[in-house]
Image (cartoon, rainbow over all chains, first blue to last red; front, side, top):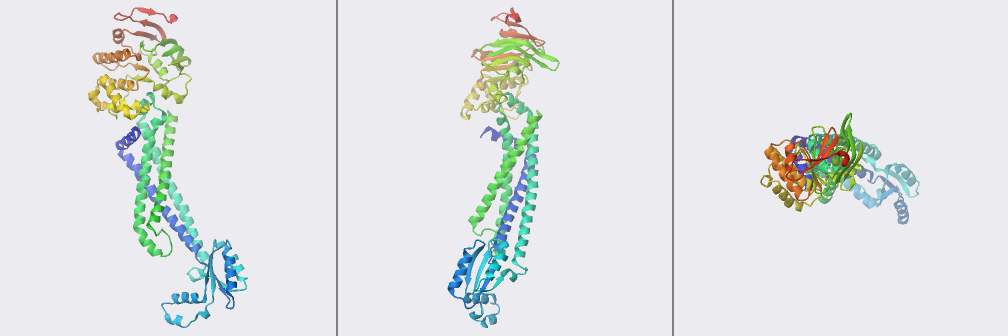
Length: 304
Length: 235
């Protein structure tokens, strides 16, 4: 085994309570970090889902020709503000109505396709474009009227729903970021204190190593390695705990949210998401360990 | 190997060395003697670049080490094996691990460690105690660990600061025999001591200090007591 790794492991074994304190704090930081990272991912997906729903329906006049419909559809498809343009014929509109009233077949028996207008459904890339697109579409000669689907929900408009989701996501990001920041700061301080204590208790050893020609890098290697071990183990254990909780909850969450893709439905994609989080947290852990131990080592060198 | 040219060093009001000049040639065994506070340890610290002189030049292996950058100091120390009066062994490492540390410091491949450590431990008579911790060893054995650690990197120079200071005379003699053996194998040895018994028994060149001044250099011929005294001005 490499002499630095062995020395670092010896340091850990000889101060088990210090090691446990460091591991607990780092595990907590990365556990909360993983939970929040997934929450931010899910809320972003939720927001995206609502933002990209077909939001605008342009009801077409009865006397229009397929060429006219096609021309408007092409124009809308070519508009960068507009997404997912779809033509809904009178027959399809009836089908949608039938599905919507399936619990009361009498209602669907009383209607024929002729009473439903054909329509063009589409969404906007950003809700801020909605009003101007609606105004433009209303001016089209083949368009009878324009509807905004959000009025079908409990909210006044879809903009309200998205607005609330945006606020929620923003709060989650800011609040979560601050919380994780505080925890990361605490972890940094813990690493700094433990490294500082290690330097103080090993002062004699450091002095001997210095006298026999050890370079500063050689002397600080086991101390920095020790901090790296705490961070790596803390990041992995924190991530693993959060991963297991999410893994347990994922089937229920997916079933509860139905079509809304708050988490990847494919196992491979879910593992991919967590793998990315793990890599990110390991990198953050390395950053914390290096900055904490370097700060402590530089302070010790200045005080010598 | 080592040259001091008009070296002076003060610690505040205390003059540790005053215009000291001497030279130690490759393969020599030189004692630096004098009463406590004479400046013996200061000379060793200057060679090891633990401190810098106020004036003068200190040359080691052809290089003026006074102007050596701080980054290069570890590499200077890697060429010197040091044996300390208080042993300075690493208490939480076994004898073997203590001797392995300089090999790691100097970047010797771990494949070579076992053979080299075994060789020096056998030389100092600790091959049977290699897995013990310092707390389980006597003073003489600890000094042997310190010597083995100094030797394992095959240094150009061995320096010892009062190596027998904490030992009984019998153990001290055994340690001195080891130093003599090492010197006969071609290693340069500089030893600071105020133990006259040791100096007289080995009959090597002596650099004598008093109040930081070099008061004389005595050349001792084999099987004779110190007789020839050279005045400082003649050096």
